[in-house]
Image (tube, rainbow, N blue to C red):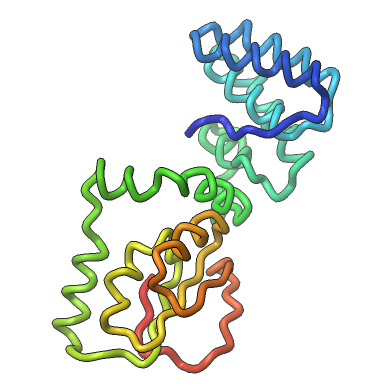
Length: 210
């Protein structure tokens, strides 16, 4: 996963952070962490900066320092958009969460929205929508008055459902994924929703894909 881009709000700190990223990319992780720590002394409330510092320190072999940085990131951003709690769990510094934070999932899929179709279909040969389409048609030939595509992403499944659904609705946690789905023009309705707390109150669906 590429580092999420977000400004610290301070031009000088951002410059230091940029140099730190260059050093990190070149493999000089310890120097990168030291430089980014200097930027964070200027902007101590920068949650994303602390998260990146943890990644650099872990790459430099300083797991304890990485844990401290991720803990600080989590304190500053309790919604945990970067996934600090997951990293803490991976290095044995926190128990496994019951579920990934919704904010992290949203940030992750927002980040991948632009390249999602190309990566999943073009590079990985993703075939699940086609397989589900065949299974649905075999189980129940004909049309469905209302189909819900939950976790619709960029609309790959929606393209398969459109020919057999009178009304097709899609729901996803990622606004950028929904933007891609909307561009395909196959849904009658799209809305942003966290499926772990799904607020759907419409008529009973005849087909639901997840």
